[in-house]
Length: 411
Image (cartoon, rainbow, N blue to C red):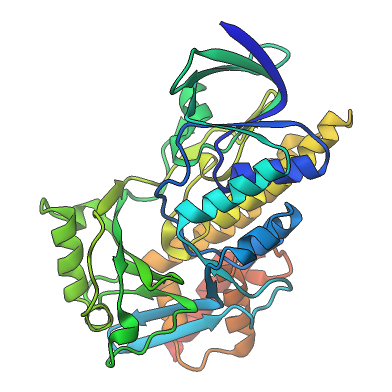
């Protein structure tokens, strides 16, 4: 079997892999990215959070993203029956970007990957990692190209950015069950035709999260794109769905949710409907001997607050900072410099996800006359600033969610 080598090998050319490659190339390091798929490909996770822009900029990819013409986004809107609330991410507690984009992930991921290639990363599409050996002085990956013979690459360090593919967790037995309930998402893309609907008041600059009044733990996303299309999906516990065709179930649920039925009455459902079941995941460790896990490979919580890409970018930023120190011969404590800082934001998002499903956060969101300070703090977390430890909702989210929920009950 042919043997090769690279300074850093990254598994996966999605957002975390591309941004990690950009950061490493800006530091002068050589990078090989092994991507199982060919780009562009269909992926969900399409509503970015403003903090993501910081990492896109740091990786040298900001101009590429801006010039791609994606849908501008400045906040999130929530609807349940007659209740409606929204957060403007420019009005937030934390400093930093207050706007971002809503993106079709196929083109968006390709923009980032193309930027990484432009910066000198060697991206090999349709190259699947089939085995990994991390027992020696250097990690060695075995690769199966779609058209060609298997080969191996030895690297100084290995970053797994394979997302839902979860290559290292599978091959190295790192997976552990998630503590979150098993949920299912049914979703598609549509030609929304909302602009042609005189009855529809809709802000395309915001993601819309809708909750059926009789099922508070079910929710829909509606993410508008810049080309007159939208991503629409519904999420619930597995037992809340039946045996009907996915398309039939999604259409039926939209029709029974008044605000969505009104918004999408002229929509063209022209794309196959897909589903994901049991998407939440966790791992025993975020790193090991000369390797680290990035993005959804580390842990995926839930799509309700669109935290996946932001966590992916944050993991790339933290891991690359630690890796550059290690490559320079400096001692690195991967637990203290990578795992613990990353978990700060993950745990803040986890608290918000849990509070959403038990309705505490929904009560806060729909509470009229929220104190401006509280609203800005909540807005900051929803905008992705879940690592700002000046925000009480980051440092002690359970305590502050409980106290605001108590105020809601009194009101």
